[in-house]
Length: 96
Image (cartoon, rainbow, N blue to C red):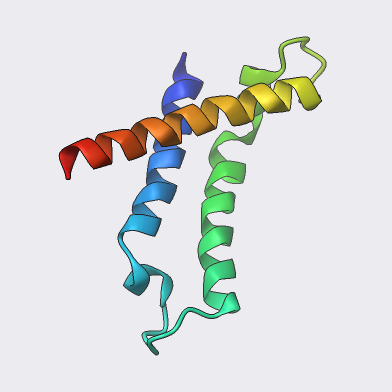
């Protein structure tokens, strides 16, 4: 299913931003990460999800076809993303 690759790509992108370290988050280069810098990075990641994948995510996890994600479907969505991120972390630990 295509959505699995999209979710994995998003999880990997988020993970890469975090693992690229401090300098990626310290966007103004002043040696500290402030709330505005963190909000900017999180906004960029969420915009990517919204712009590119929101409808696909709904369709992939909307098991009853009502056009919405209910709590049970949401829990399954979170479980899948958690599994993907854990797999990325496991691969990274294995490569290190």
